[in-house]
Image: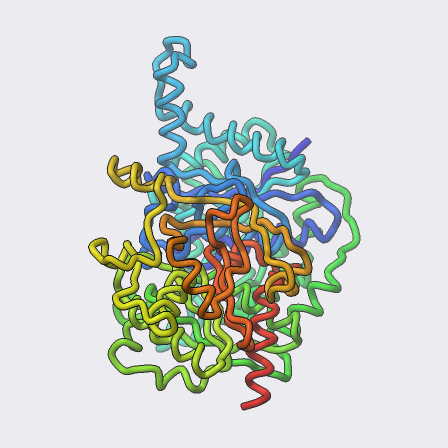
Length: 541
C-alpha cells in the first residue's frame, strides 16, 4: 500500500519545509523507492499565478501548465522528475472544486459541509496524485505554520488519513530553535508549544527536524524528547548549511531515511548518493569562482533583499556551476539602480542574467545592461522579459528604430517590437488574468548550426513558458539583416522563441524559462553553457 508522509512547520515560516520535503524525498528515492511530492498552500488564490513575487516568492510553472508555489520547483530539482499540476492545491482550488461538485449535484442533494467534505476532497487529491505517479511513498508539505487557522482543513485531512490506516501515515514537523544573541543558549520552548498546538489538531509528530543556526546538542534533544512526547533518536538536527544540496546528506548522516522506513514498516535498502555527494561538494568548494550579476526588479522588500523571487534562476546557475567545476558568486543588481547610477556596477561581473518580469518599472535599466553586454562582449543571458528587452535594445541601438518598445510598456507607441498576443487581447478585455497566459511546455525548433542548436545538440526541444507578450514579426526582417539571429521558433514559424548574436561569446535570450527544467543532477544546457562562457571571461579578465 502507498505510504504518506506529512511535513508541517512550527514556530515561524521560511524555515525550508519545501527543501526538507525534497531532501527527505531524495533520501528515500536514493534507497530505491518511487517517490512523489505534493504542495498544499493555504491561500484562497486558486493558483499562484496572480501572486506578487515580492509577497510570495517565485511562481513556478509545471510541464502541464499550472502556476504553482516555488516548492514544486524544489521537488523537481531534487527528485530529478517532473511534478504534475495534480500535485499542487490551494484552499481556493479545493473549495472551487467542492462548490462546482455541489452545483453539479455530485453530492446527491446532501448538505455539503466544511468538515468532512473539504478534507475528503483533499484526501482524494492526495491519493490520486500517488496513484498517478505510481508512488510507493507520497510526501505532502502543508504550507503555513502550525497554529494558523488557514491550514486547519489540511491538518484535518491528514488526521483523517492517519485514522484510516495508522501504519501508512507519519508526520514530520520542521521547527525552529532560536539562539537569542543576548542569552547565548538554544531555546526549545517555542518548539514545545508548536508541538502542543499540533497535538490540539489530533496529530502527534513522529519526527522533529530541529532547524537552527547550529547543530542540536544532546541536552536539547532530550528536552524535546521529554516535553514533545517523541523518542530522542527521532529528533533530527537540521542546522544552517552552505548549500541546500547538503541537506539530504545531513539527513542521511542521522539515518533519517532508515528511521522513516522502519516506522512505515518498509524494507531497509542501501543508499546510493555518491553522484549527489560529488556534485554538492563542487557547489560549495570548487576552486574556481565566477561572478554572475542577476539583473531584476523583484528584490527589495523594505530594508531586506528577497532572492526567492528568482529561486529557479539561482539554482539553475548553481547547477551550471558544478557542471563546469566552478562556484558561482551571485550579485543582486536592481535594474532601477542602473537607471539612476549607470552600468559601472556591471564591470566587475563575469556574466549577466537579465531576468523575467512584468510592467514598465526598471525596464530601461535592463535595456542599458543589455547594451553594455552586447558592446563589451560580456556574456549575457536573457530570460522571458529579458529576451523582450534584448530585442528592444537591438532594435533601438543597432537597427535605429526610434521609440522601439513593448506594448506592455507603452501601448501608444508606433514601434512595438514586442506586442500582445492576439488571443491575449480577448482575455484582457474580459479581465481574465489568472491562468490565461501562455503556460507550460511547448515545442520549439532550433535553427541548424546556430549556437543554441550546438548547445542543445539537437534541433527540436520543448521548454516551459509563462508570458503574455511576444516578439512582433513585422520587425523580424530588418533585425535579421542587422545581424540578430532568430535561432528558436515555434513549429509553425509564427512565434520567435530564441534570439542570439553570432559574433559574441554568449548573447542568447529565450522567450521561455529554461530555469524551470534545470535539475541538480541534470543541469540545463543553456545555463551550463552560460556559466562556461562566464568562466572563460573571468579567466581572460
